[in-house]
Length: 232
Image (cartoon, rainbow, N blue to C red; front, top):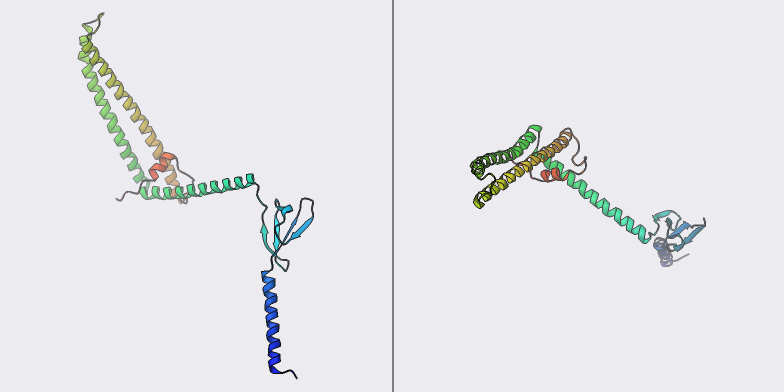
């Protein structure tokens, strides 16, 4: 009959051996497996150099697949992958920015009437500048009349230096005002184009299109959308 102490020792020894075996199996390195360029299956306890450009399977000790090891990239392939990742980051940032700007637009312009009011206010400032330039042009024309009357007295002769200076100054001021009017007219075209683009986008947003779903805004529209909403 086996003594109780001997039986316990044998039992603990068996448990310890089982734990050691399980630990060894768990800690054992995986097996790499692949099929090389010649169609031959290769296995190794470390990554297989012959399959560096191919997919490799890392197997568990029981033969099941632990994970798939992708091919090792060449320098050019790695550069291409990094470029794709950078572009993906840029695209994500642009998408995030478009979403934020769309939300700003909707906060500033909750309805079309608000947007139309903002357009009118922007155009009013330009119209005021045009009217000011037109009044200045009328004043310059009035100033020029007596100068031209005096110049007729010197028909066929050289104008006095002072008169010539006054006429040249009048010409320069008149040209400057005309150029300013032309610039203001171009500004009105730009403002209307900006608000047209905003309105087309806003109509889709008001109709339920998700913010950012229409891609990036144009430069001018983006600058407008970046403005914080006005508290009314």
